[in-house]
Length: 208
Image (cartoon, rainbow, N blue to C red; front, top):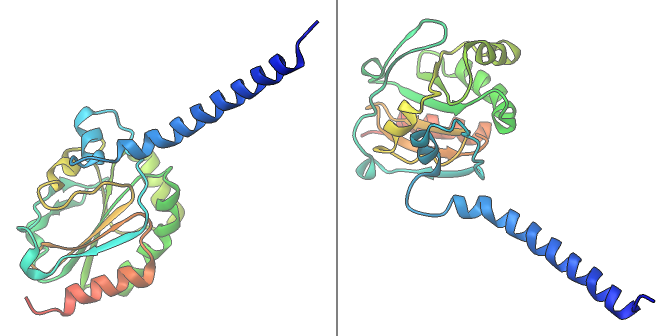
């Protein structure tokens, strides 16, 4: 004969164990983002090509006195365009770190397209793809009508280089560079269109 009290205790024990396991699983991704090292840069250094850490949409602006040196990037885009940061002086520049299967990247892509058109001749938009090969990246660009160039960075070279300027910490991350090519603002997560527009406008109109 089965003791009903003992059976109930076993069921409670299993539920308690499952609850603890679920809570532990929820805590692990958060714990992975804690610490001094930029977690996205850590992934790039390890070469595991995850690049999936999500941002919360937080915005950080950097005053002229607190900005680092001029960002330097030299690369070739998927479409063959040469990307040379030496040509960015005198305009604002937007660097958007993305990949095709990233849901927040898909949400913000139309905003990027619209703002690229709105600021044509005043701000340069450049995508940095952290995960995709050429075919997947170009399919994404066709889907959303993206006309500005994107650079493949599946090896994490640019991501690692960016740690000397500002930590990325998430995908998508969008950086706005001032007219001297220095990071003036960072958005972690989806770039809201009005917010990004305001950050670009500030970069263009401020006197340094």
